[in-house]
Length: 401
Image 1 (tube, rainbow, N blue to C red):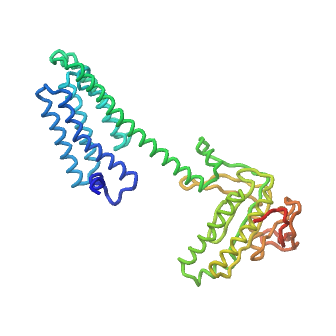
Image 2 (cartoon, one colour):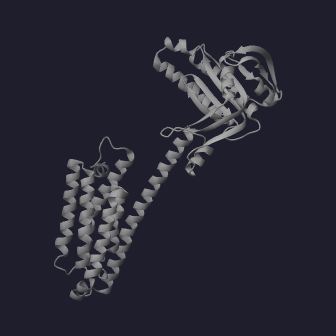
Image 3 (cartoon, rainbow, N blue to C red):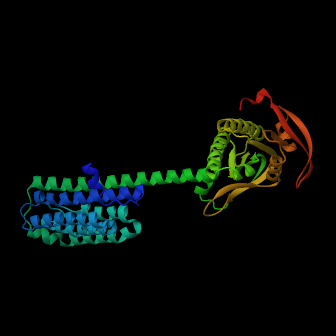
């Protein structure tokens, strides 16, 4: 479309969506600056400088747009645009009989620093705000002389001129403020989304409230580890893209399952998945919620195997008890947990049976029954002899996974 082409004269293939939009707003401002000066002819029809001044700024704006289309130098274009406005507004007020005449420019002058903030950023806009104040000071200083040398315009002309020169620039200012606020809110929403994807929502809220170092003790939690048995040798014989695609499918299902059961996914590394119940948000049913998630994980893994024709199963291990959690990292923050409970859960997974849920005695005790289990006496690497439990079948009272 011709309209789109006219707005896209400053576009560059490397522009992101935000910069492209700001450029197009700048181009619209340029087109407005071609037409707006011509209204001076209606507001101050009798002054000999009216036509030269109006046509001069219009032609300058046309040339500025042409140079922009050829060079794509947007910063130069913006500086030229707002500089021309800084000169034109006081001159327009002069030929219109001063700031109380038929062509006042006080509000139009404010568009200069307002647009500079939008196009150039706050730091570079500050000098243009100073220029705005100086131009107002100049117009006020010379207004008595201008009024004395001018013939008062008819009332109707002054009424229309003053109304137009307030409503139009304030409307443009409103639209720019609205655009800036919408853009800010979208950016904040995106930051919040990224933050809560990396760390729990309750922790993210504390960070936004000003906390810089977060470390807490969680007295009652259950940690879950899941790992694909035999995945490392399988990947050695499988094309990398297929391995990554399959992992993405599986972990996408595990992430969704953790969210459904209200557990916090802590991390996934390689083919290992870790989640915790009871941290950072405490819950009395942490052990039962973790077992429910473990059952959902095995169901998701079964569907994944069937859909992709795989002979791979997950080992799932759980342990319950206290731990410490907090946010680590400055550039790439993440929520992590530490303690013996984490180490034991990892050992339950590594010493477990593919396709089964392996519970530490702490989780079995926290459950207080409700599951059919198979007792085991094993020697756990790094821990020693332990009594553990393999889930045989769930009690119907736990509900469907």
